[in-house]
Every structure is written in C-alpha cells, then in structure tokens.
Image (cartoon, rainbow, N blue to C red):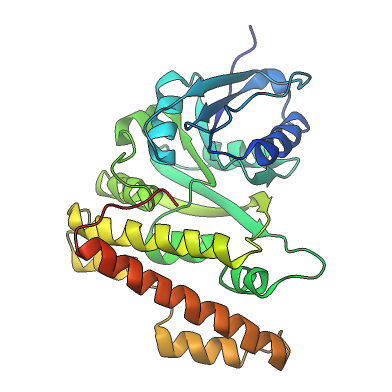
Length: 294
C-alpha cells in the first residue's frame, strides 16, 4: 500500500452537488491519488450523501448524526491515517496544486504550526447585490490568520500528530469552532501562518435568504463563544470583534472605488439587513432560545 501523506477531511450537509464538484477537483490534484485519502462525513443530510462511483480516489464515506460541521470533522480526525490533515469544505474547489503546496508549507515549517491557505470567492458574471457584498467582505483568510490568530477550516493544514495533541473541535459550537480550535492550539504554543499558494475557490452566496442564514449562524457562534467561556482574555474579546465597526463599514462601502454608486447602495442595503439579522439573533439567544442549524 502506498504511504498516505495526507487525509483530506470534508464535512457535508445537504450539498451533494457541491461535494461532487469538490471530489472532481481532488481527483485532478497534481499529488498522486494513491498518496492521499479523502474522508467525507455526511452530517445527517436528507437525502443521504453518495460518493461518485467513477472517481479515481481513495475515498471513505462516514456519517455523523450530531448536528454541526465540527462534530463531523471530529469523526474524520478519529479515523484519519495520513501524516498531514487537510480540512476542506464541500463547497470549495481546490486548485490543482493545492495538496502539493499545502504539504510543502507544512514540511517547511516548525511542527507546531498551522497552515491556512487562501480561500478565493468567485462571483457569477452578473453578480447579485448579495454576491457583491460577499466578495467585498470575503473570507479574509489572511486577516484572520495574521490579526485574529485563526484559520477557517475551509482550507487548513496540520500534522496529524499535532492535531491529536490539540484535541477535538468543540461540538457545542455550530459556528466559530475553527476559531476556538485555533485558539486552543495557540494556548499550547502553536503558531499559524498564511500560505496563499495553497488555494481553494468557492462561490459566494447569491440570495439574501442564504446570506441571512449565514449571518444568524455567525451571530450564534459569537454569542456562544462568550457563553461557553471560550473568551477568557481581552485579546480573545478583541479577536471576536468585526474588522470594522458600523460607521467604518458604512463609509468603506459607500466610498468603495471598485463599485458604481448604484452597486454601493445595493451592497449597503444588504449590509444593513444582515446587521439587523445578527442583532435580532443575538437578542433571541439572550432570551433563552436555542441556536438553529442555519
């Protein structure tokens, strides 16, 4: 049997089409398929997720009944066999050299280093106002890594032995578990580096409904960070703050040189709506409601 250099862990919930495209991209990696395994965890999708029958991949399908991508990632961590873990989202398309570049970064750095790759948003030819807003705000992977000390699990590499040392993701979080896991690693003496050459692409949300679901999930994640005592220092509290306050964000959008005046107003209306959604969701949770799986 060929030596497994990498275990790619992909949680998926109700996104068969996204997963199929993701697996096709993995099938075309420059790293030979025999040198990595793909662990797909179906997080209670309806209908159940199926693997591509004709894919030239060493692919395993597992299930996780507990809601939340972090619970699903823990299932993958428990059975992974590769030297390196590569976390990937089902709606992301890794570029051809993604695995090679991620391995290169891991091998060139201290063992106690997390590697976060670039997550690039690719809008449609005629983007909606929501797409424009999503592309403006983006994943901001470099900012999150360098200023807030965490990497999105949409594109994250770590040695398996070091991942086991850090421990499992917090399964009580439906959002923000990647931030909490990165901060746990930081407390154990790990550092995190941005490596743009290991890139994946993903499409931004197009509809307001989809963006609202994401805004609610993020608000819930931030609220439960504080409730679960994940935030225990001023530095962590700062790390939860948005990149821009309300007034800075307003000025930034309304003066953005890359957008026409019409598009600035369209994007601003989306931003205001999503801010209100987050405020309402936080108020709902403070009143004792449970977070919904958005």
